[in-house]
Length: 167
Image (cartoon, rainbow, N blue to C red):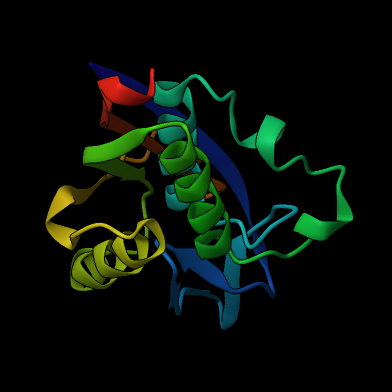
């Protein structure tokens, strides 16, 4: 049996914070200040969308259910660790990842040079081949909060295969 999951996440850009996307620390400066994403964890919007897609496909809730921001153990946690824990959850439920397709929605920065590293980081956390992860980006042509560079969003979709023997 195969199951599809969709994930979405959004975070506000703020000064004096590292920008982590797909487990990659990206230098993103505006007027000489480093900008990153505000969140309880490291704010990796791309990883969070992937986590939601995986959990949704497996019927295991969402990132807020599994890793609540009211729990101090997740304060400033590396999202690659959250991906590892998500992988364990779906593996123990009998699922394997067929593929993941993720889109970063941000006016800046351009991520073309980071895509392969992002895919490798997420694949390592999920214990799958980087070829199973596609990462792309789009702007919103200056429209909305992402176009005004107030924040970033990400969408992800995944396909899981369930082992019939474990059902």
